[in-house]
Length: 408
Image (cartoon, rainbow, N blue to C red; front, side, top):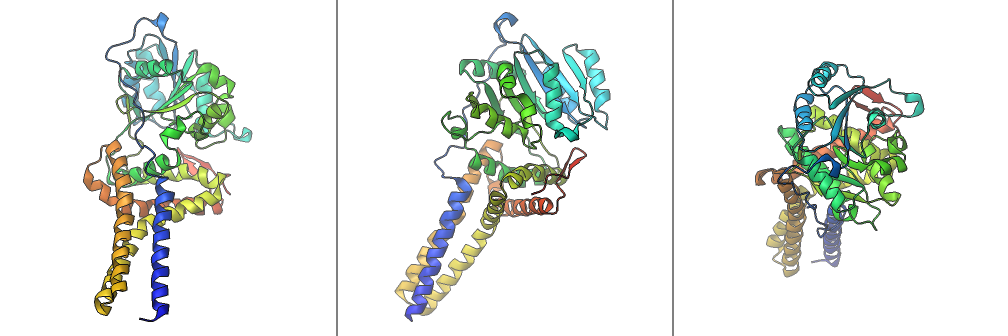
């Protein structure tokens, strides 16, 4: 066999090895990083009297939440916690949200409804941070719990979280809830999104005071009021789409204790219910990384797309290598084919192993793990779509508001 053919073959093998290794490292950040988070243990009984527990203000930004409020409000108002208030900020809703809030506030005087004022766009405010700010201004608590309208809380969730935060001297406690996944789109795409989050923000590094890695889940952020005020509150992140991420950076960056925990026994959430909602929601979320770091956005798209396409390319390469080996009957061709097959198995298995870890957290059966190539391909298109919208200066649309100034 000509020397040139051997050279090309082994150069190709080396390139395949490098591509596989690069995709593995870029996608998983090392499989030694734990996906599992420390759990917040649910208390077995209600806490003692109010004199021994800090007063908590639960703050809910709500815009067009008529679908979610009937599930959320009962769960917040039945908390086994001795002294707390619930503040819902009606952020200029255009559906039945105001009527639902009025009915519930008449039933329980612990519920205070704040009628949000018009969004002051000329001051740089985005919708959710502005609603959070209004809720915090009305709050009387020593601690603030920011939570979203699409969540449902177990009766002991607040007392369990507060006990955990006090016991571990935490200034900002955020939990990841039990994710409710109903539609095909949710089960295909949500695991891919969570893979990306766990890769970029490993919980072990988030919880390490020495590490600069920081993230919080805006669905549940329990923060000391004095720390909230010290870092500048949501006014500090008023122009950020991912206000939870930026607030966590501010808290940790200013030397306060940030902690991310497993709260699946405390709270559940269904973020989206169909493909359109999943697409719009995650398009909004990925805009931040593209706007703040365009190079990372391009790399993310290339990495996700390669993960979707790589298994098929590697299988085709392996089949071709074995056909060539069987035809030539050369030992070195068989060795090259064997190596190619091994690399193919490695490149296909590694993403599935990691995906299975995430699926277990999400409660998805084994079969959904094998949808990884399809889900990553769709998510790659979503990333490209978001990037092109930024290039075109179209920004993002969320909850009926368009932020057209979010361009590169």
